[in-house]
Length: 258
Image (cartoon, rainbow, N blue to C red):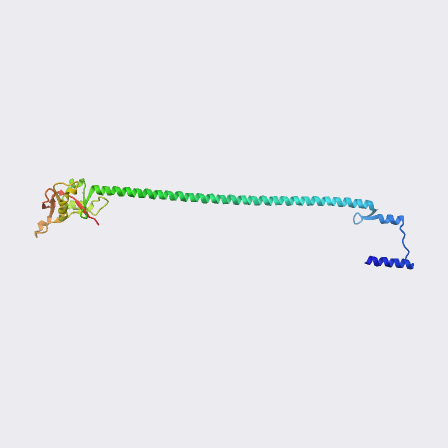
C-alpha cells in the first residue's frame, strides 16, 4: 500500500516538473548489478552480482553440508543412545528373568526338601509304628507264653515256677521285684487264690507237685511264736498246710488285671 502511494506521488511530481525522471544507463545498470559483500567488520568489498551469487551459493552449500553432517551425526548419536538404552533394558530384563528363574528354582528346591523331609518323617513314623506293633506282638507272645489268666488274675507261668525255691520273706520280695510281661505289680498269692489255681492247674504249663507259699500268715492262735508260720498248698493233692517262714518252698506270683 505504501509502495503504491510513493509511486503515485513520484509520478505526480514528474508530471508537475519538480522531479526529473531517471533514465536507466549502462552505468546505473552495472551499479545495480553490483553487490556489497562484507568480508569482515573492517573490510567491505563490492563485487558483481553473478560472483556474489556464486559465493553465496557455495557458502549456503557449505553450511548445508555442515548442517547435514551435524544432523546425521545427531541422528547417529540418537540411534547409539537408543541402542544403549535398549541394551540396558534387555540386560535388566535378562537379570530379572534370571533372578525369577533362580527364585523359582530355590522355591522348587525348598519344596523338594520339604517333601523329602515329610517322606522321611512319614517313613520314620511308619518304622516306629511297625516296631511298636512288633514289640506289642512280641510282648503279647511273651505274656501268653509266660503267664496264664484265670478268673481276672494273671499267674506266672514259666520255667521259674518249677525252679525257684525260697523262704517266705525272699519269695515275697521276689514277687514284688518281678518284671514279667512288661508288668511290675506282681505279688505273692493268697491262700484262697492258690486254692482257685489248684482247681485250674491243668491250664498251667510249668507247675511242681509240691508246696507253694501263700502270703497269708498263721494268726489263729494268740501265741506269739505262731506268727512265724505261713500257709502253703501242695499242688499234688491240694492239701493246705502251714510252715515256718524260714523253711524253703516253691514260689508262684500273681497280679490283678485292672
